[in-house]
Structures are given as C-alpha cells and as structure tokens.
Image (cartoon, rainbow, N blue to C red; front, side, top):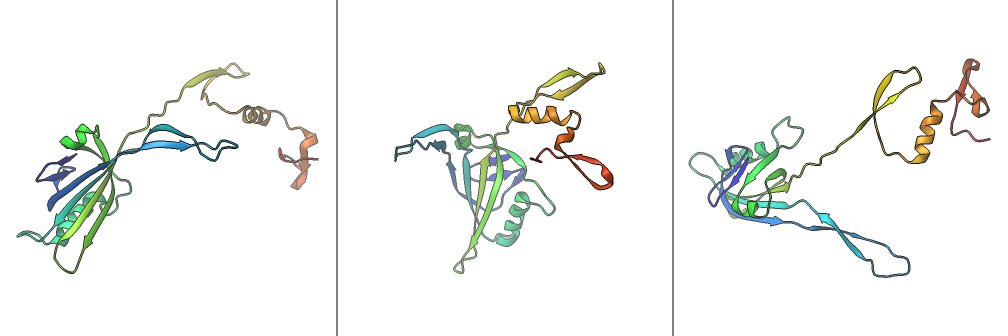
Length: 193
C-alpha cells in the first residue's frame, strides 16, 4: 500500500524518509497512425489510453537518526530488495491520485541525484499505473475415434494451420517421405519435388 500525504509518503507499510516535494501524474491517449496509399498525411485513430505515470520527488538530508545514504538505502530496499526478481504491485492512496482514478501501481523506476554543493540527495520515484489484463479461455469437449472423451482448449487458428494440424495426425504419405538412417521413413512436410 502507498499513502502520499502532504508530509509523509508510505509505501508497502513503510514511511519513506525525506521531505515530500512534488507529485506529478502523466497520462496519454494511445494513437495509431494508418498509412493510406496516395495520401501524405497519415490519419490518426485513438485506440485507448496508456497507463498513467506517476513521479514522486523526495529530498533526503541527514537527520539525527540517519544520514542521506542510509535513507536512500531504505528506499532502494522498497524498490528492489536483494534477491527480488519481480516488482510488487502496490495499492496507492492520495486525494490527487484518487481523483485521477489511479488505485494500483508498480514501482517502475528509482532515480537519485546528488551534487557537490550540499548534502541533499534528490530522489525521484516513478510509478506506473497497474491495470491487470484478464485472459479467458474456453474449453470444448471432443470425442475421439475410440469413444473416449477428451477436453482441449478451443483456439482461433488460421485455416492453413488447422489443415496442417489435421494432416500431421494422418498416416505418412510415402510420396513426401525420404529415406533416413537404417532405412526408416521420415516425413518432411517442407520437402518439395
């Protein structure tokens, strides 16, 4: 869970160190350009929306308990712990984000900057809106030649591929076969006379 308040930022139950400076939300429309023969201008077609991108800027400065590098280490461990292979999905709570309809995010990018004029590290946390994709499959039941029932997923395959699959289960056509080691017959569907 991520909570962004005027004073605190909380990610996964941990209050991020530092001073909250800025929250920026960016969202775009997905647009496809279509090539039309004979026209120099490409018509544009809106096809949906990109996932929103959220940038959170935090300033880290030494305090009584930790220096700026120890604070950065805590943020790094939220972004990616040692041995972590996949990013976590977080629920996010903030009035600004809720107004924009953003409730779940992935911690996409962590950037830190320092300069030689101060002991402040500026941290930019980038989150991307997380919208899971639901994939549904249907199963159909078929009866084989020996009257046994089997279940297999129904896929929308192109006709040529369906034909290939049907022929693959048919007996070997010796006119398309070539001799192999030990006089075995090997069927090669790509063989052309």
